[in-house]
Length: 265
Ligand code: KIV
Ligand code: NA
Image (cartoon, rainbow, N blue to C red; front, side, top):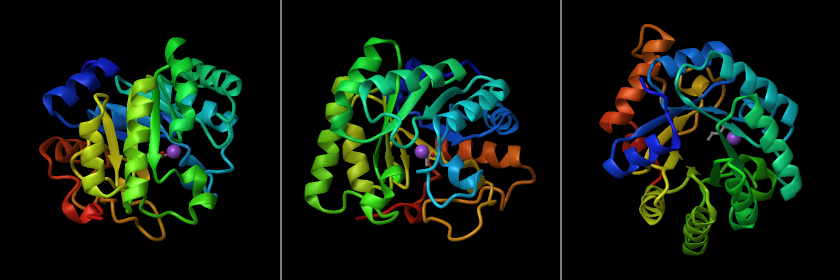
């Protein structure tokens, strides 16, 4: 496979070919995920929960993110590497520049930030300085205390409209990718059509340009309550690599996500 770039993703959006993203936290996962054709690896701050065993992503530090991004970069074949800016590490623009530098120098090619229009100046500044961004909207886990739990977002008209505006404003500011988490399928479809940049979904239905899952979730390794949008691809696979290959094939064919993985309203 050829190296995935922002250009590849934009082309896929334009031609309607779905792209794939999986999280990885170490070199072995990164190699498995990328060698099976996954387009993007996300070094997600979900590592706070699935690697470190914490209750939320809030305790994750920049040092954690840099360490795991380095590990992933060593194992990657030709996926595009995206890494999360953790909780409060983009509170000011200056701080974001410093932290984005650390992630890019650790091997990230895109940095992901949680938040809406208040990040427009940050996104514009990063873009001008050569740092591509992905903006995470909808359920933003770093704000779990503010949101009052892990809930579907954008269910009422006011919050839906606000999310559409956020996506448009951030794309206009220079965001290269929008990521939607736990958003009703019709709203995700509308946002995907409203912006010219690629949109990745998790729990956002089948109509976003790409799909992302947490690697442990799709390998059936996560204990406790399983979110509705998760599918265990190990159930019918012989090896983890086969499960990843099936995820890639099912996203490309439109078989995943099925209606039961999404939220109608
Ligand atoms: O940290 C993460 O894994 C994420 C995905 C769930 C999108 O942000
Ligand atoms: Na994250």
